[in-house]
Image (cartoon, rainbow, N blue to C red; front, side, top):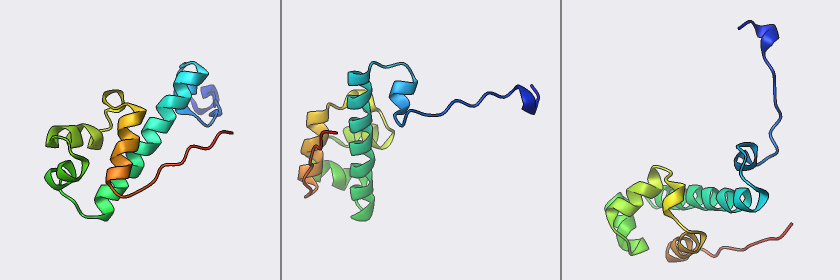
Length: 96
């Protein structure tokens, strides 16, 4: 393929919508992934090991490993909100 054969497609701002998920599904996937990233950052900012994070989140170390590996499908939005609260944060939902 030459450079002239390249087609550029602009993102909608939600990779899940771009991948073909329905708008409601794409919104939930995006919220879940953003929360997962935020929780990972909280764990990193507190310099917690996976074992220590598991104690704070009240889950097994393997669940923290799933979180760290980005296994979005293994976590409900409710669970991720609970994790954020257990890390000492509040989650606020804003409707656009």
